Length: 603
Image (tube, rainbow, N blue to C red; front, side):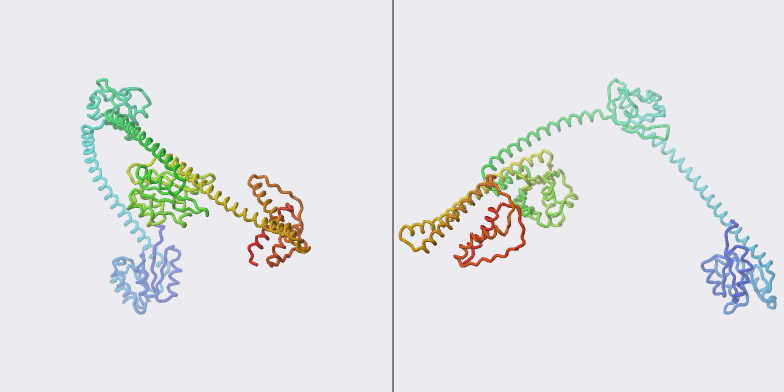
């Protein structure tokens, strides 16, 4: 390629000479590289290839001849053309030495520019042609090698092809499966011996016949050959053949078929037996579940203790229904607490307790118990893999405990209370049998019965607490009613027994009146409680100055406070506006607060 640029090395210790050479040769369009010494020239030769070297003879340190000698020692630059330049008065003694070092030309200074340019052009063109010849020679050698390799490969392919043909014939003759080759018209062009062995037709009988002529029933060709279909044997019987199809080029198709008649009959018998066994097993399981639920209902209804309720369920479930049972209940602060963890093997119960959910686990959505608490949706884990087990827990110790327990299948269902989820119960199994949707429904039924038992226990506790609270209330009420009544009766007896002075009599009436009012207010409070319980409490709403209600309550309670030497101080904002409320109820609220404060403040 003559348009490629080549490198020309210009070597002279005088910069002005290098500049002159560059100016002279620049119109040749090549890469001109300058070197100001023999050492610089040798350095460039280490990493560049040059088409020509123009070398000044008279240079310090290393002259042109020494530089040329070093250039010729390197294999890469041994044949690079060198043109020597020297002064005219030294030409005669240098020319012979220059040629002895392999110079291709020798010019004396001053030289004719056109001559130098012409010589350089010739050497540049020679270099390009030499490079082109080398490339063509390399390509030719490569083509010869590739041709020889191709011929060798063709010979090998011919041998392999013949071997393959022999192999295919052997396969067709000995294959246990039916092998058919079809042409583009779906006619049989070749068949294996198995065709004759299985269907009774010889190769001569089938060659050239359309494929559809052997089908028991007609149908789309693609549907028939890609699945299973019945073929008519030569003796008139039907054989079920399973086919697979493979394209052979663009004009042929290979069909491979296997006689599955007997296998399909055996599979039908086996499926029938499996269905019968499954139905029997399901009936037995349903019977066990029904018996379990019946017994559980009986035992759960026999106790109002929720702890005994949970223990009863676990004893029934283990080991009949599960290897491991756990129950978590919701706390009043919305946390959860482990109410029961039981295992069929007492020695493994400590492992089950190691995976107990802690408060820090409540934010983890990977834990089924937490998810069921949050969503109320039951979860079934039919077949738990080791990877799923690792993803479920976020703790190495828990993972190892679960692995040692041999957890394989589990159900986790919510225990639904009246208004919210009150707990979660889970059953887990390490046996080969896996839980199904039937076990999930069963677990939900158990959870409903537990919920009912827990609800009954809760109602019983609430009834007991209500009864106890009622007794306490009646005792307190009796005391509260008796206290003012005793004061009233006492002063009445004093008034009847003797004559009192005016001041004492007035004080007696004041005490009787105050205690009568206190008793009336107490009775009114009781009536208010009754009205609140029955939903009949009425409020007389009207504009009210809150300060007035507070002052009235203070006036009512002040005598009691004075009797205990308790000083009441009141600071009310003078600019406080009105509010909407029941003045009597507001005064009653403030009076109750003040009365309790005075009552429980020591004198």
